[in-house]
Amino acid sequence: VLRTVLAAQQGISRAGVAGATALTRSTVSRLVDELVDSGLLAEDEPMVATGRGRPGTPLHAGERPIALGLQINAGYVAIRVLSLRGRVLTERLETGDFVGSDPARTLRRVGRLANRLLREVSGEHVLVGAGLALPGLVSNESNVLLLAPNLGWSDIDLGPFARRLGVTEADLVIGNEADLAARSVATPAPGRPGPLRDFIYLSGEIGIGGAAVLDGRLLTGRHGWAGEIGHVCVDPDGPPCRCGSTGCLEQYAGRRVLLEAAGLPADATPAQLAEAARAGDPAALEAVDQAAWALGVALASVVNVLDIPVIVLGGHLGAMADLLRPLLAEQLQARVLSAHWVPPVVQAPAGDPAPGATGAALHVLETVVDNAAAWVDGGDA
Ligand SMILES: [Zn+2]
Image (tube, rainbow, N blue to C red; front, side):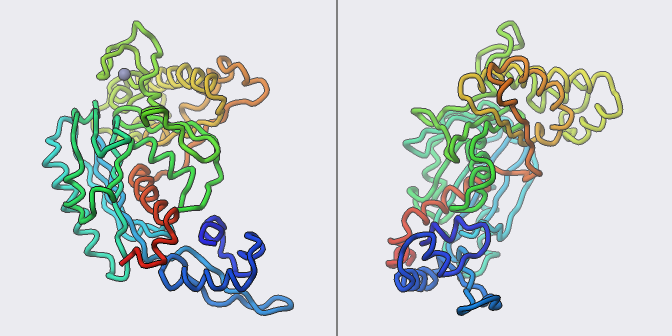
């Protein structure tokens, strides 16, 4: 019943739930009452009657369970509080240079900000956990960040960080930022599928993260490390990469590389780069073309391997998608074997500046949906 309500794009009535689940109206009503009492569901005002029968009352996800979504990237930290409805209750994004930052200091700062935000939300909410998105490889068996090359962080046990947030170690989830950003596209609110079910996600930051989603589910690989499209080799004779390889995609399309190639300062914005390219600046145009070519070469290989011909560009790549698209599409058309039958599509969703933080909170809230019975039985206390 909970999943049926959450999956509905608009409010659904008890009768609608009964129709969708093949449960009797009385069973649905009893379960809905329990879910409303526990705060997992909420009821709107009754709808105006439009025909025969009693008017229905639209049901929605409740707002009692909330989760913290955190993201630490090379250029910013973001903290959000999301409710089960997928609504952002409060948020904070602070820019800064976190390349080579001291992990303990940065985590203390994020913890302080998170606690400040939690104090802003009312006491009716229950914090169910926290999710942290990081730009690197994360162990899927423990809360250990193995390596984040662009932060310069490695082997960091984030278990103790949970206490700083007021949650247990078991209620802290850490994940790769591109994986979590992709999750926010696949499932924009807990239990509610987004319009895209199959896509390759690329997150453009200083590095480039990637993820593949099929049937709305992340393809994580055996250890959770799949999707490192930023380190797909575009040219073995290309420039060295922080990962130890050479000619990786992020050495052509990463934010810092792009800005440098365009002759712009390292703190310039993607909008400034796009503006310079649109104004016909030769260095900016050359940098954009180089990035589009490299993206085409790398993504064509990914599409050939996975048969997922929809590309979603996030971060700075999304902000300059219209500039990248012509050459990128041309490369995909030329290099993807199946392009003749299903032409690859490049999309750029409108700018959430920290989709990893959103995805991290959504990931935590999904656990409430998975364990709804325990929550109704008083697991929230
Ligand atoms: Zn690399």
